[in-house]
Length: 490
Image 1 (cartoon, rainbow, N blue to C red):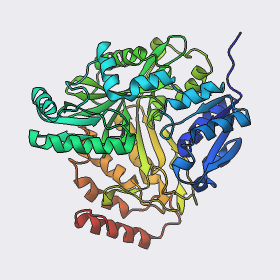
Image 2 (cartoon, rainbow, N blue to C red; image 1 turned 90 degrees about the vertical axis):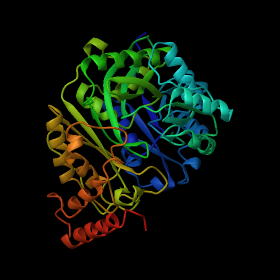
Image 3 (cartoon, one colour; image 1 turned 180 degrees about the horizontal axis):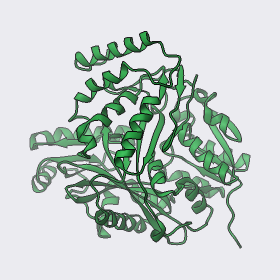
Image 4 (tube, rainbow, N blue to C red; image 1 turned 180 degrees about the vertical axis):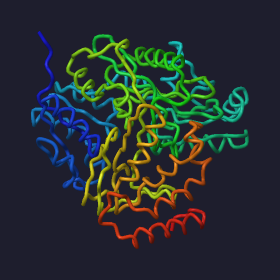
């Protein structure tokens, strides 16, 4: 019997990713169900869906993390599937298990694959056993002397990492042996607090590292393909703020090898649906880092260069259909860049700045896409991550993509909260960025970006007809004063 798509999907998330999933569903003729917390009662994603249901108070633990409540709601409203988006419950193996128990499809990987890739140590071992390169490292650390000896054998500098979790939480770079003991203890404490698992390990710290990841997708019929790489090296506190594809450092030959390694890694775990295999890349060599068992924030740039709608493919795969394309049919055209527009103040160490958006005009024109869950009058709540919008540009080559990014950022009107818009403009002006000289320390190694940013704060967008030049000048002067005092928060 021919497999059919779902009739109704509950989206267990909020903001831009909820709307992104709902748009794909709408194009496929699928009804959508939104959930919202007290803080999101007037949010755009709740109005966009065919129906919306209150899920709890503003605190995530009482709303968007209420697994049992969400699954029950899906059953009550007649949803055949749940899409988790990213963050929140998206990588909790209990989620697909709870869905399966009541006959609801989970639009994501199976619980077994999540568990296989949820521990960095187990994922490293699995990847290595299938011929995927990994950095020299240890198992779980218990004995301080054994840890010191292992670090000496590996060679300093090393990096201490929690086995569970992600987002750079608990990671510590250690330059010398005297720093190792305190770093392990600090990493353990952070991991215990954030993930409930104090297990840590040590691996070799790779010099001049770039963060390069491969997008994969697998169906229930044994087909696994990759859609090339994304360069994600520009980060603050191990959190990405700008991504691009293709990577300026990856050749077609390296892309093929990385793609094959990524496919081996996920196939070994019995992976199904969309996922990302992350690598550390340095001077032509790459090493397995981890698997993100979900859709990534930065997936749109892969969509722009391949023409593949990843969310639609996720839905088709979860419904039992095979992938709509083969590896040989993947074609990559042009260059794409994504800039995460966060409600953060770069001059104050990227401290979140949740406020009401008083003016909003999104950029447009050729090759420009804006994914967001906000608009004029929206409140940016303090309860969740600070992402306000994703600005995605696509050009025939990297030079055109950069030119479009500069133009689109210049057009973007977003007043109310401090945002990363002027900081992105400064990055695009950096000679090192233009030359593709990137590492995961790009922001730390370019403190001059803050000074450059103040030039853009003194300008109004050509689209901002309601701006008061006096207010713009005052904002620029305030940031300049912070930068001049060393960037400390008041």
